[in-house]
Amino acid sequence: MSLKGKKILVVEDDMILQKTYKEWFTEEGADVISAENGKEGLEKLAGANDIDLIILDIMMHEMTGTEMLEVLNKDDRWKSIPVIVLTNLSEDQDEIHRTLKLGAKDYLIKSNTSLKDLTVKIVNILK
Image 1 (cartoon, rainbow, N blue to C red):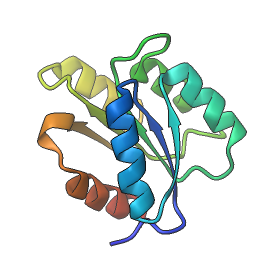
Image 2 (spheres, rainbow, N blue to C red):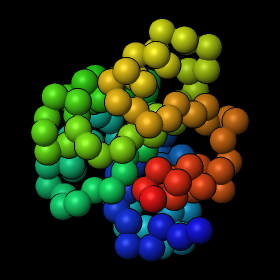
Image 3 (cartoon, helix red, strand yellow):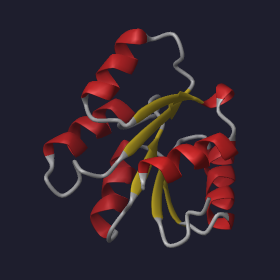
Image 4 (tube, one colour):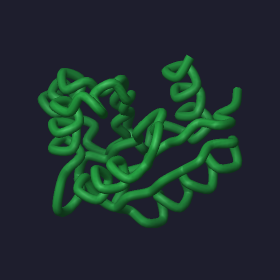
């Protein structure tokens, strides 16, 4: 199980989690780019080449993860990039349905998902 050579964009406003994800995925061999909100995520995406996967929080300032998904879904450059939503919004069935309808590959709850489990999901999606 390796992420060697993969580029991952982590869009997360919690700086401790952002740092944790970056360190973990870097140790797993990935090149990690971080952003604090959807707007910055789109800016980083526009300036990066060949992003393989996006990990996306939902509740963020300036531009939410759902708003970012809407933009990704409408842009031919980005709509094929797999997105994993990783959030604390566990009971919001409308939000889960909406993000999956917008093309997210999975909707995971932060508190229920270990870094190892997340890595397995990423590897399986990128096969």
